Image 1 (cartoon, helix red, strand yellow):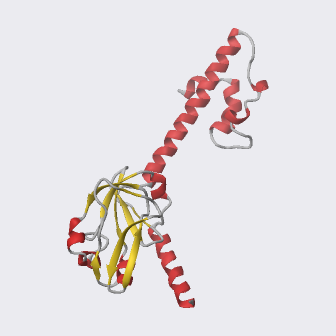
Image 2 (cartoon, rainbow, N blue to C red):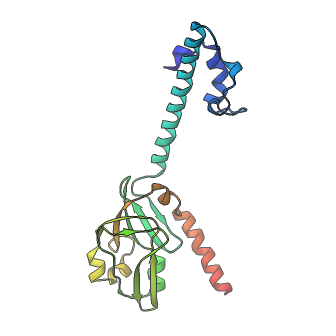
Image 3 (cartoon, rainbow, N blue to C red):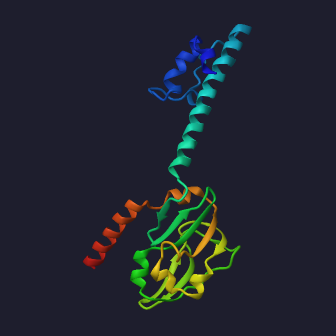
Length: 206
């Protein structure tokens, strides 16, 4: 559609902004009156056409950015919290949550792992369960907010599963995500590995 306006003088003045080669503020921030014809039927029509070209271009660009964001947040991707929980994206709105292998090793043999009921909400950075294990008791802190839609009853009845396979069979619950941004803010696998190194080094200093 932009080809129709390729001979438009005003549109050409907007090209640096449209294509992101910015030395000036975007049009929607500056809107200089001198840039546009302000009187006459012909001028008004040209102005309307050029505005259309500008906003069509931006709509296309913004749509591409949104597509890239969705691609960046891939289904099946796993992120990690600094409280040693993992969360796997099952689709755009749902995710599976569990404890990391690092945490289960720190806990030792798990004796009990009570979980909230389906339909209840977990809230980011707030405890949702308390694990009783050989090496003590540990609260589990929610990495994201959302409604619980499914529980892994096997881990409630046989918590040793979490010790044996924390990242797969030992998952804890599935949630309907309240905010995809909360998922994006969690640590990637590489970032989590770096965090573990830092945490171990700090522990040695203490």
